[in-house]
Amino acid sequence: MIPFSPPHIDQKIIDEVIDTLKSGWITTGPKTYRFEQELARYCGNSHTVCVSSATAGLELVLRWFGVGPGDEVIVPAYTYCATANVVLHCGARPVMVDVNLGDFNISVEAVRKALTRKTKVIIPVDVGGWPCDYDELYRLVQEHRDFVPSSPVQEKLGRILILADAAHSFGARDKGKKAGTLADISVFSFHAVKNLTTAEGGAIAFNLPPAFDAEELYHYFHVFSLHGQTKDALAKTNGEWRYDVMEAGYKANMTDLQASIGLVELSRYESDILPRRRQIVHAYIEALQSFPWAEIPPVETATRQSSFHLFLLRIKNITEPMRDELIRSMRQKGVAVNVHFQPLPLLSAYSRLGYRIDDYPVAYHHYEREISLPVYYTLTDEQVHTVCDALIASVKELLPA
Image (cartoon, rainbow, N blue to C red; front, side):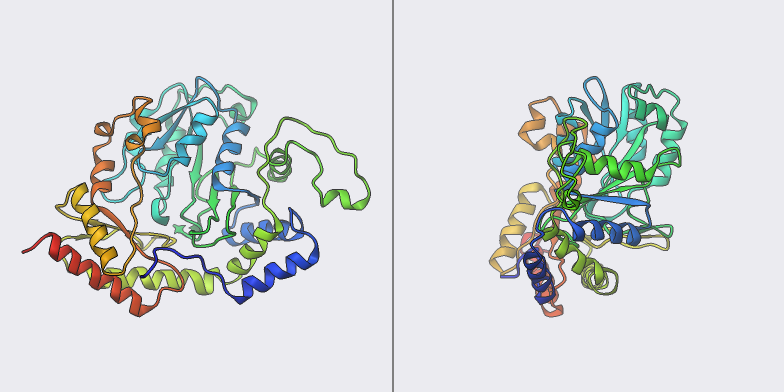
């Protein structure tokens, strides 16, 4: 069986983790801080804070920005539940909008229609690693004259915050800039199945206007992500044990065990991991683009490049039950595939709140025809051919000429 997305663990990673274990420093420490610096250097933003997950990072940012009851946060209907869950955790209302016809990303025009005086944040999602149209989103929030700040931070920004759910897009680019510098704040995921993994974990990349002190923000989020405590364990090693708790913060710090994995992966990300994923994606395109039933996702243009996290293929002229039968057929042929994602209104937690999938026809039309093919570093060329052969044969069985 060709798996869908096994983690990439080799001897270099094992050795680095062993080195961390032997160092005696397994919680947040020197390697986490080094990983943060190298992440910021890679992306080109000023400061990055590592956290326990992308979900934690998104919620920390919303709470820092003062999002709460009575506020609205615009999210795409086509995303993983974490994007909207964090809005509910803050007591605010997720305002769902539909996505583009040509890709899986949030529709700027739908965002425009959803803006109100209560809108505080827009969370675009780079689905599959394909960057959203951030230039248009910035143009939209700068033109919006009905922003009503309800916290000092909101007043300082003076407009709606663009908070990128960049869980899929580490390494993606648009107009010469990398993810991490495309939005005001971007949050990455380093979950086990992501391009760059730390087993679990994430990072908050800051790219706010000059009015915000990036160094101050960096220190604030370190405190905020560790119960609001002014000193972590590393800071106490100099003998000054006394600390204060500035506010009721959260437990969302990354550990050196996690960072040690990330440091190895980051060191070879641009030269090895990303090129291999690009090769696999383009091999799929080459093998499938001539078939009239294959709707190929955008992955690269003259100005924009995906992180090649997912290959979200849509099959023309099929229904949701037919798509599910296609997945079963491929599994019988020894190939595991997946679906990204069930639109939020299809999930019980959101349908109970009154969200209806009929209000998001593009999202549903994408979803009912979508399958994600395996893309991971250790996938061989022979396995890529096997995946394509299984897909072509399964579609032929499903849609006989």
